[in-house]
Picture 1 (cartoon, one colour):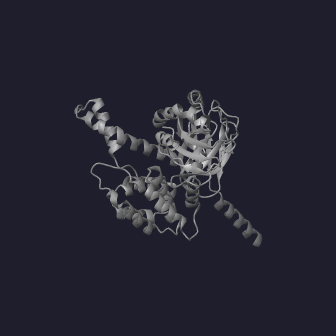
Picture 2 (cartoon, one colour):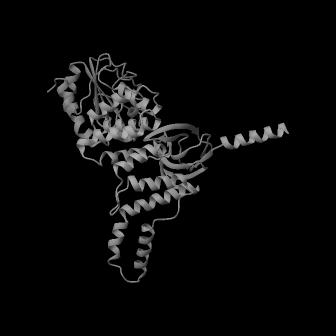
Picture 3 (cartoon, one colour):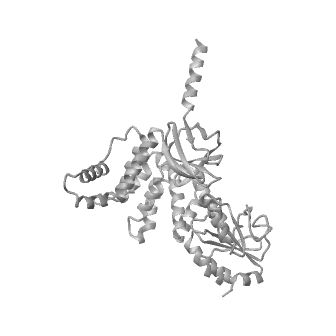
Length: 427
């Protein structure tokens, strides 16, 4: 009997530990072989695993339970696809054109339902108001008028009961309450938002809602009370808890992205002064900001295929000063600012100043055409915002500038090309 019970226990353990499988299918004309699987923590993608193609599919076994948003990313073509996990098997099939994903079929129940909901939400926002206007001109019982009424009724209905789909129900309910703006609906109060952010279950971190809800919270009160409102929220979520630290990390990133420098500095200092154990999310935010503060040594970057240089990395380049600019060929501000640096580039070279332009482009042909006209050192990972630049160098927008001394120490972080020129006394 002891052996039988032991076998039962082993089988039960295997059943518990086996979570779900992800099956991704495509066609032969989609050539990428490697796939990255990401889960979500707040607004940060967390690499879960990597998988190599077998035939025309990828089979991924997920051993740990997970409910929330997920993403697959194909680095060879720089394309991604979002889906959800209800801790059940996932099956997705897609077609492609020139290695870009086109038609997507969600073949498991949860993702098919979520896709349908998002389709309806999009039509409610953009199409439903137009249908109401059209209905005024088709009041009779003709075929088109009846079809209009049917579609309006479908898009206007509250829909079915989603309680058996825990994540879909969570996302739909809280998106509607805390993020979505509907005419006639009463927006959530600060107190309701604080209670939700401090009391919600762990699906908050995996839902993609945290950043949007925090943005809505920051916009609820008057601008001169933002700091008081943030302090009130942080007290409620408790900075000694993982939830509190993730909220703090998100807020620091928001303040950084929107150039709210005083608030970013205040709460980054508060994070650095915490005496408790720091979770990975907040530790990453602290480290990234520390690496890119004035006075810090700029993290090195090994070039992938740099133009106008034989150097292998930023550190290999020898100059009295280096201007590192993060840009993109699709950035209108970059289009306006880079020519100002080109005008002064000869003067920079005469003072042994070098420019290193790291691009967040993703299309090689577009990037190659652009850098033909840029006289300085150019490089790109050709992964857009999936490149390592954003995380390593705390880049949230383009263009972003750093001025380094000969020892690669950050000595200035100008906001614009004109500020770079002024700092270098090239006016």
